[in-house]
Image 1 (tube, rainbow, N blue to C red):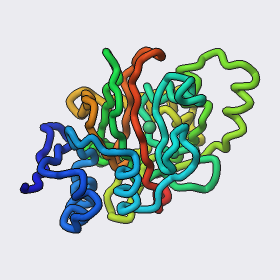
Image 2 (cartoon, rainbow, N blue to C red):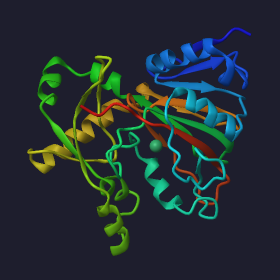
Image 3 (cartoon, protein in one colour):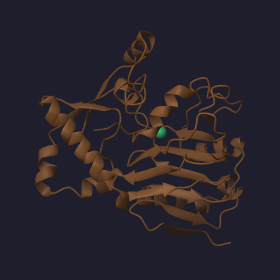
Length: 279
Ligand SMILES: [Fe+2]
């Protein structure tokens, strides 16, 4: 079968067809096509792939080093995304994924933001649970020259607390202490990548712009996020069981549409670690 990569009609996202599961591990042509397509389209969608956990992990290892922290799943390299606390004891933290974010802006250690994330749908929600994507490269491209010049000098403090507060506005003292144990990070607002492309570093973890008035800071971050994620810029993935989606976390911002905590929705996630600092 011929492998095709077709844009999904948005600024971000393409569907890959003509790929069999086994090819993900064995086909060197594919190993050449996918990283380039990921860089170009930001999000790649494979329908009906029905990837097993082990195959997903092996495929991701071909893309780079992966996160092997325990993930509430028996297969190393898999993190089980579920709001059901019997399946994932950290499920409450996942509600923050209902807001736009880039993974890995406030790591526990010195890790760089993840390079790519792969999700496979094992079970889907009866309603909600779609995943939305917008390109932060396009968000930069759509700025005026004057804005680019102004924003180039700005730095932003990111924190776990900023991303958790919207979903848990009245934290217990223990929750607050846990959030604050995670170090805050200061990143430039504009990320100049090794490739030369530039993107905006936005999302729920963005707490405030350094050295400007707090109200002005909030208004600026909100405006940039709003423009980046306006409906005409967004690809919304409606999940079917067996879908696999991979996205370039360095140039794409994402969020999940809310769904019920009792929902059977279950995603298997593998994270390909990043090797590029935000600079
Ligand atoms: Fe995420």
